[in-house]
Structures are given as C-alpha cells and as structure tokens.
Length: 110
Length: 111
Image 1 (cartoon, rainbow over the protein chains, first blue to last red):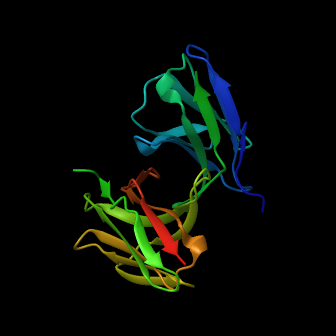
Image 2 (tube, chains in turn yellow, orange):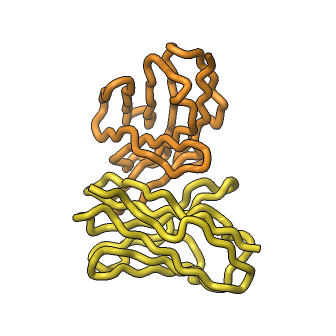
C-alpha cells in the first residue's frame, strides 16, 4: 500500500497570505488528523476528520481550518499567515487508534 | 504539569548497549500509548504501541506500560548508530483520536 502523501513538501509564503495544504491518507483509511510541529511547542494536534466531518479540534485559532472530501483526501487552510505559523505540518492517516504520518509540509512564513 | 513528559536528553549510549527511554503521563484516563521515532528533518515513524499493562516486544524494541505509576518506557536492545534519533512518546486519552505528544528524547548511539 502506498503511504500517506502530502503536497506540497515545501512552501514559502509572506505574512498575511493564505495557504492550502493537501493530504491523501493510506488507501482504505477514512480518518485523517493534522498536527503542527514547531521547535518551541513540539507536536500539537490541529483537527481530525472522519467521513468528511470534523470529529475533533485542537486549540488553534479560527485561521486554521480544514476539510475532507468523499475520497478521504483532506486539505487544511491557514489564512492571514503569521510568522509564528512557520512549522512542519503533518498529516496522519488513522487505522483504528494507530496513526501513520506523512512526510509533512514545511511552511516558512516571511 | 505537562500532560506527557519526557527527558529531552541527549541520552548517549554506546553501540550494542540497551537504551532506556522513559515517559510519564498525567491523565489516568489515558488508554493507548505510542512510541514514534523521528530523524532530523523527517516525519515521525511509528515504532510501537501498547494498550495493556506489562511488556510488549517487537524485535529489538520492548515497550513497557505501568498504568498505576502512569509510566511508559521503550527499551532498545543492541543499539545501533542508526537508532540515533528523537523518540516521541504519545498518548490517547478518552475516545478521541487526538495524540498528545511529549517533547521527545534525543538518543545518540556512539561507536
């Protein structure tokens, strides 16, 4: 089976812009979670989607949003980018309680 | 108190030795426990998960869980230089699928 894919792998944006990241889970997995990883805060949960519905949400501002499509692919969007949004954004494909991470998208905000 | 605590290290062990990585968690309702390995610049890779008290072995890796002490550990036998990485402990509490991570322990295996 192919693993989790994330696009793009690297992204450079400027403050105030918005960005959309994409994730395709492992084939057959219907649930996707998103995490943000920074040196200061470590890995933090953003949200989880199952069957196109947001099932859980972490403690992030409303600028962070996501959605899931009928084919289980998911996107997350960050609007009005801030310097502090620079991070590695990780998507995880869920198989029951076990989560498998994709390669991540490295976002740099200038 | 942090929900999941790990010593940041670095933990330095010689090649061939046993590396012992420890993790404590604060919520007694935590039910599932995971160890991930993360190489610099890469994403976390699942090594093991454990749900029940006791030991679980997979090759050179053994996960140990003690719910009464709210403690989970990872033992790596016959440590190799390729094991040098950051090891992340993560827990799931309740019915949600949210993983709560520790800050990770950096392991260095020396020749």
